[in-house]
Length: 464
Image (cartoon, rainbow, N blue to C red; front, side, top):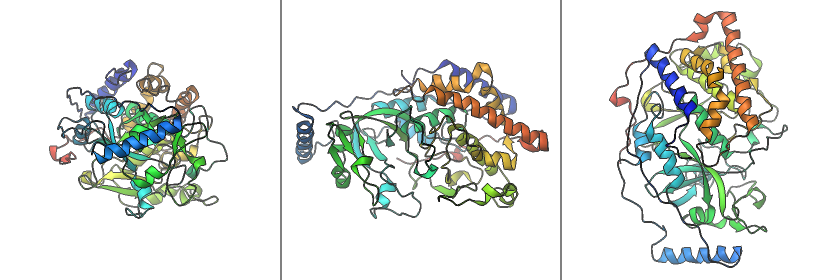
């Protein structure tokens, strides 16, 4: 199903949320640009056996490199109307994109269709090889694999391959910091973030990648080239290159070439739109037996409230938004959050790296809601959206199910995960009611509806 085809429940929901804005005085933003078209990358073939096919394709790559014909389609000149560039230009202090933006649908379509012209490790993997600063990256392991794919129109996306089947749950004995990274969790997190009207997760889409044609044959990274192999089942596989746990057992494999994965649109370059990475005040202990102060001190929020910027403005309210989002997806791995420096201390928090969500539909982790339950504060607009999604007419699981059908890898989530969203939503609302019963609505529900008209200078303006 095309992303240009908008699901009915999501459309109606956006209209209801827009009513909140008109009634409460929030700014409504829309943009309209023409649809774009892209070509489909052809499939490799022509060898008698998978191994012969693999070697023939590799020799073909070397031949094309000598003739400077590495890309099957020559890169196009940079177009101002390119969807990724319009996405970057549309970022404001209110979110990564305007509500119901047609640009996002076009960007999702382009990430599904555009030809891949290069592939490389992400900065996380490069850090361990001394190619970039290691101070602010998470060290990868063999089960933590992601690649940067570049497209024909100069856009790029983060590719996370499928590592776990949809019907599999994370084992009970797994610690959150060694859990699998799930490609479908990244896709579902984007859809949920958009339904909640947060708009803080970069656009993410599912795609079947031909690992031979779209990664091996287009990468110039010799280390990445070296970790490809053909499995005993004649499937083309590759694994992460890092100091530990990097074995063929942790490889991801095509079938024999095609592999599911998520593609998340890149944000503007840090040189053009600097971001801060800030430790989450409710960070967890990344050890087997340690506990952080918030886990043992029920009055921990009083300490947080004394520290700037949590002592004033919207930062603490945004932390609560993030905690509600993480609770709904079951993500316990939010150790840091990022913000654009241009928008100041009250800018929105980016909800990045959601691949450890949707691991266990049978378990709800109440500790994720600690910022809400300990601080007892929530934005009025957030509460209104949650209450709307608890109504039978706009039930969260129904809206998510319909929204996810737009993705080519549908079904993205199994039915138990969708139903878990409804159950967790009721738990969030119950936590809010408990706070209101204790402190009163005036102290718990923060009025965030009076916001100024964003200035033109508030937009992120990457240059070309």
